[in-house]
Length: 382
Image (cartoon, rainbow, N blue to C red; front, side, top):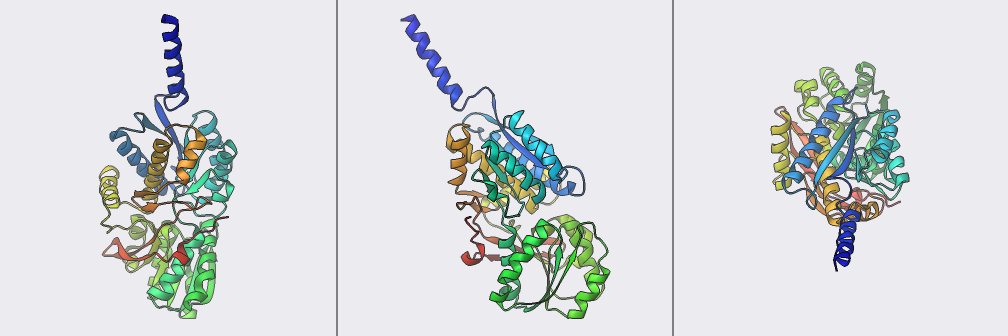
């Protein structure tokens, strides 16, 4: 009888060990972001957003009784850094899920490593289409660049009623994807693209572009960029006497943009994921708790990283184990209300949700409008 009892006990222990308990007392989630370098401000916001999500999940009991352990590495926004980081997270740290809180270049590179290892990977906000095309273990909780570009066209042509537009395009994955989506949808909203001018991520002096934009006498400007490029660009456009609406995207979505551009930021409208005036409890509580923790205003990057961690935690909990196939399938079946809306994925792992348009009013981002047009927002499935 004693021998039988010992066998039964051993079997029970084995079942627990093979399921959720595992060899670790925590559930490890990997996270990489640009904590140093030109994108360090975004990396800081993203990492604080991710940490907040972990704290909230752990305070509510964790995942099936286990605490989340967030393992963070600095990728400096460089693909050359994200590849070894991905390998380390998988091989050394044994993470259940990897999350990118970084830009498209490093995210694209890391995605292939996670896919090859069959470990689920979530892009919080990087927008390049090739990220999810890495395979069926890769997901994205923010918009494709092309989808956001199409939303920008609807905002300009239909909501604002502007038809003659000049484009100012950042020469990287982010800018090119946005521009492609905008131009694809422009004709549907009666928009004439009178000219398009490109610039480098290192550029801060836009005098020649501003002069050419003025010569076109546009009704609106569609300008891609990050807060650190958009701030100087908008300042120089306004200083030159250009007063027409400027429409940007989530790269502007930071209080840093407003600080850099100053009064010139007033009236700038962007397409993004975070509505500062939302009445949804998930969004409102995220904003208040993030700002208390961080000591500065919430932004899209922080909300997107927070969203990605919440999706990861929810999937692991629903999977009931850390088995990669079970977790991957749980992510694919996600329908979850979070700070950036209700998250659900299509067959390619692309998110389907509404676009939030924000406008600068009195030095703060405020609600402008929402785009929930299915034709605009539906991402590709292959």
